[in-house]
Length: 143
Image (tube, rainbow, N blue to C red; front, side, top):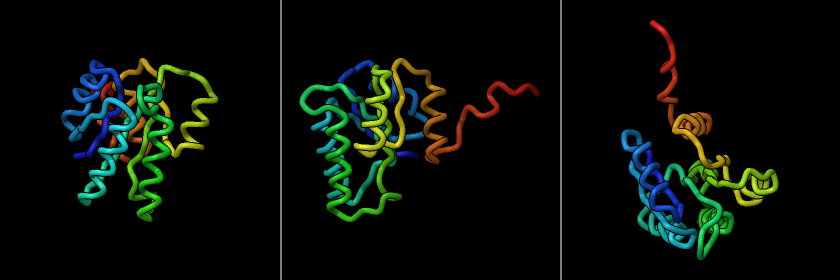
C-alpha cells in the first residue's frame, strides 16, 4: 500500500481523493502547506516516509509551491537521495504554463494535474511515475 499525503484546503476534494485511493493506499491529510510541511517533518523524524504527496497550489497560510520548496529542503538537509523522496504531484485549477513550469522545475514537483480531473488521470499519473501499475489497464478491453 502506498503512503499518500493529500494536501488541499477543500474538505470535499480530500474526501474524494481518499475514496479514490482507499484500496491502494493509506492517506493522511493536510489542509494547507504549513500543515503539510509539519506532517512530512514528523514522518521523517519517525523514520517514516510518504510515497506521494498530492499538493494543491492555491491554499491559505502557505501555498503549495512554497510548501513543496520547504519539503524538498527538509530532504536536502537530511541528505535523502532523490529516489527515496516522495513524488509531489501538484493539483490546481490554474491551467497556466507559467505555473506548470514553476511547479515542476523550480519547486521540485514530478507532475501537474489541472482540476477538475477524473480518477483515471490520477491513476495514469501514478503509473507513469512508477508508483503503481495502472489498475485501469484493460478495463475497456473486450473478451
